[in-house]
Every structure is written in C-alpha cells, then in structure tokens.
Image (cartoon, rainbow, N blue to C red):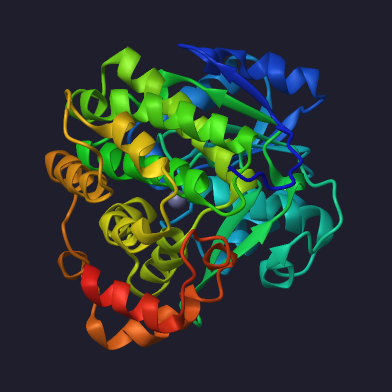
Amino acid sequence: MTFNPFAFKVPGEVIFGANSISKLPEILASRGLSKVLLVSDRGLEAAGMVKKITDILDANSIKYSLFLDVEANPSCDTVDNGTTIYNSEGLDGIVCLGGGSPMDTAKAIAILATNGGKIQDYEGANKFQGPTVPIIAIPTTAGTGSEVTPFAVITDKKINYKLTVFSYEIVPEVALLDPEMIATLPALVAASTGIDALTHAVEAYLSRAASPFSDGMAEQAMELIGRNIRLFVANRGDADAASGMLLGSMFAGIAFSWARLGDCHAMAHPLGGFFGVPHGIANAVLLPTVLEFNALADKGKYEKIYNYIKRGKNDNAFIPEMLTRDLKALLEQLGIPKTLSEVGVKQELIHEMAVDAMKSGNIMINPRQTTLGDIEALYQKAL
Ligand SMILES: [Zn+2]
C-alpha cells in the first residue's frame, strides 16, 4: 500500500439529532447573527419545510429575509438575485435549507456578498479572499453532503456549463442534521440523492488523492448508506434509516472534500448543464458504467465496496464484476432509470459533453487514466 501526502481538517461544526432544528436560535446567537437570509426553494416551501424554519425564527424574534427562487441546477442569475437581496437588506448571515441547489446558491451568495463581481469570476480553487458570510446549513436530502463541503456548483445557462467554485471559506459554519427534515422526501428523490451520496463515498475511496483520513470517512459513509438506503427508500419515515442516510451522506461529503471524486461526477455535471438531468439521477445512471471502466485499476477496494452494498452472504471468490452486478441490482430495486436515454439525453451532444467533462479536476484523480475518447465511449455506453 502506498500513501499520498495529505492534510486534513473538518472546518465546520456538525450538530445531529431529532428536532435539532430547534437549536437554530442558539446557534445564530452564539455566532452573533441577528438578521439572516433564508435560502431555500419553492418545492420546500410548498412541502411546509420553509415554514418549519420561519416558525422557529419568528418564535425567537429573529429577523430574516426570504430567497426561495432557487431552481434545480441553479444559475448565475439566481445567484445574482439572491446577492441583491442579501446586500440590500443589511443581513449578517445565511440560513440554508435544502438539497444541493439551495446549498450551492447560498455558498455563491456568500462569496459575492463580500467579494462583489460575478460567480464566474471565482471558478476554480481559492479564487477569492475570505472570509465570506457565515452559513448555517440544514440539509433536506441525504444527499449532496454540501452542508460540509467546500464546493459550489453553479450553471452558466448561456453556455450550458456547470462551473465549480472551491474554497474552504464556503464550508458552512454549522451543519444542522435533523433526520425529521428528510422524512417526507419522494421515493425517487430519496433513491437518487442516496445513490449520489454513495457515489461520493465510492469515488472518494477510489480516488488517486485518497488518504487514510478520507478512506475512514468514505468507509463509514458506505457502511451507513449500504445498510440504510433500501430501508430509507422503502420508508422515509423510518427514523433510524433516515438518520443513517443523513450521517452517511455527511461522512461522504467530508471524504470527497479532501479526496475529490472521479469520472462519474465529471460526466454528471454536463448532463445537468445540457439536459437538466438532476445531479443525483445523473450520477446514479452513470456509476455502474464508470465502475466497469475503472475495474482495471482496482487494487482491492472494489471488494470492500461490494461488502458494504451487497445483500446476504456470498461465498464465491470476489471479482470486480460482482460489484457492478450487485450495484445494478440495487439501482433497479430503488427505481433508478437504467440508461441516459430514459432521462432525455441525446447522442448528438456526446462530444460537447465529453469536452466539458474533461475540464473537471475530477478526471485527473480518477483511478484509471481517462481520455476524451474514453469519456465519449462511456457516455455512449450509458446512453
Ligand atoms: Zn454528487
């Protein structure tokens, strides 16, 4: 076994527990935040989730402004609109309620509020001066892990391009994990976001940038997700399964904050940019194809992943194909579409998508070296 040089810290605080959202007032007070922007989306408003938070804020006389116009695959314009509200109302912090889209938007607003300019100016790693606006993040999926990650992904709709901003300055100050906040997810959202979280753990685990720390986080994530994803999709009201998934996605988020990801995420972003495929679905459909491609580079971790997701015992000697076979069976059980065609992806844009995928830093740390031609072939195979 070889070891990469590494540094590791977890910049934000994690608070977990049933009804932990009730701690929001004391969390805000402890950080001197008295007038916040609540960033969320219209779906969560309609589901009554936004009201759960505003009721707590109202009951404690905490002032807030609302920004709920966040769409799936949020755009640069959305970030600008949220920043305008933040700046015009003299606010001092952000409470973010959501899956990945409100989280990404909140992080981007936090950057622009203190640095000005456009989010496109900050694409890449550490392209702005910190600190940014403090964010309290309350995840409603399990999930992106965005509540503990230093990434914001925003779509430039003019060029159908998903740009990634990376900085530890945008890791939320507090991740408030309340399993009751994911209890009413639709089954397909629970399934696709859960597989996204599993993909974070798997790609971080196989990454050429993995370290013993990130491996520990990824293994914990895979154990929790492997044990709970079927139960959670079957019954989102299962408090233990919801807790396991929420914690698993958080651990996966910490793992990939440091070890990064791989070809699956590099290829998922253009599917969102060009065809609006939700991030979780894009990764879930691609993962078996990418794992088949990467099997050639396996140094023994495939068997560990397999042991986390398999059902029952298997007495046969392990070969990497067993992982992709069982993963496909799991995806089918969870109701994930089998092909990219089923989610509206068209063959004509494979080359453009592959060119964009190759711009991702995740290609460089994928376990198997990957060319533009490889990516085109993988899209074709997944189609
Ligand atoms: Zn993801």
